[in-house]
Amino acid sequence: MTQSGRTPHNQGVKAACDPPGKVELRKKVTLLRGISIIIGTIIGAGIFISPKGILQNSGSIGMSLVVWVACGLLSLFGALSYAELGTSIKKSGGHYTYILEAFGPQVAFVQLWADIIAIRPAGVAVISLAFARYILEPIFMPCGVPQMAIKLTTAIGITMVMYINSMSVSWTARLQIFLTFSKLLAISIIIIPGLYQLFKGETKNFQNAFQVDTVQLTNLPLAFYSGMYAYAGWFYLNFVIEEVENPERNVPLAICISMVIVTVGYTLANVAYYTVISAAELLASHAVAVTFAEKLMGNFSMAVPIFVALSCFGSMNGCLFAISRIFYVASREGQLPQILSMIHVRRHTPIAAVIILYPVTMLILFLGDLYSLLNFMSFLRWFFIGVAVTGLIYMRYTRPEMPRPFKVPIFIPAVFTFTSFFMVFLSLYSDPVNTGIGFAISLTGIPAYYIFIVFNKKPKWFQRFSGQWSPP
Image (cartoon, rainbow, N blue to C red):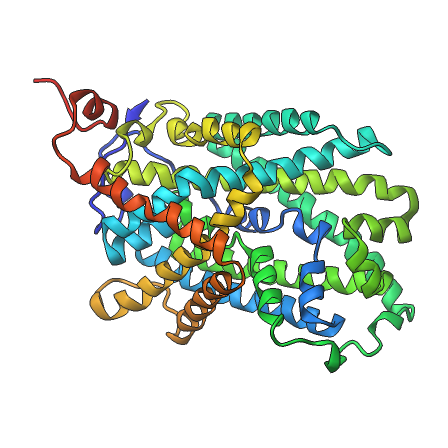
């Protein structure tokens, strides 16, 4: 492997200026691959398993469909804001890079610290556990799946994804395209029969769909909270901007196409569910897609867990591909050990940045209460995304000269920022203990910044490890 050159945080990467033969991450993410990254990471297990959180908190079928559409629109606002950031600051890294550009290294390091110690490893572990559970379910049916079998299969799945991402960017992207089409096929298998039943006149579940007396305004924000989580993933293409062909054109296009596909798919899938399943049945179900398939397709319902597993595997693959670029960029900026900015000479993959999460994820998987950890930290994702989009508004005034090939009306980032911070406030109100623990974990990044970054009189062994010392 060889080290990529460090880039000062206030400059974009200019591939045209690279010296001949320089080892770097290549631009292998086409428009189709960009779309597959976004769709493949947004659509996980949620739409197939448990859309009941939105129904439960919205109070009626009609309002739940309104929430699905509204959350898609709000996510589009966030994605368009990120499209402006990505085409203005052509550096990979997503949230980390934009916070670094707008608010400086200390705030960016706190976000990075929260990512490394909890958010990313817990997130990968959770989606990987869902993959293992549903790929094993047809094998063990009608019995339950043993917990150790789930964890061992999870470990195998994580290892496979990390190996693929370490070996080839092209194969990672091709796999993501295949898995994305598998997800869309799975959603189509739900939508088409469901809409066919609707056109046949199966509309009894939609009677009084907008019944007002069942809607509680105090619970409505929680429905939006669940919906925004279902759409989370639209930001992952920004993590790999440096590898996108013609980002000025392809990033906004990929974002708009992906968000339209996902919003339409989610909404129609829910319409299909309600055509076959009543609101009471949906609320009682632990796996809505399986319940739907059992009622409408008979034995074909056995295939649903396989589709869910493929969907989860696609989320694992897309997430890891994108997340590794955060660590790669942070290393290049001098905030992580230098080895993480190394690129394999032949494979052109940041292998060290890919595998950094492996030991922590495995530790959490087998020893930690990862669901509690994810609850502690999940709201921080929206906080830092809100901070990043606030940075867009801030830089409109502090850096008006910055080139902006794609520019959105200011109300779009303003509405999205308000929504993000409102969800954070809602977390503080509804679950102050877990939210407080999450903030406390995140704030440990402040002393860590001074210990690992600012403090210059480090032992030589530490400087060797962090790549900041060379022998005389």
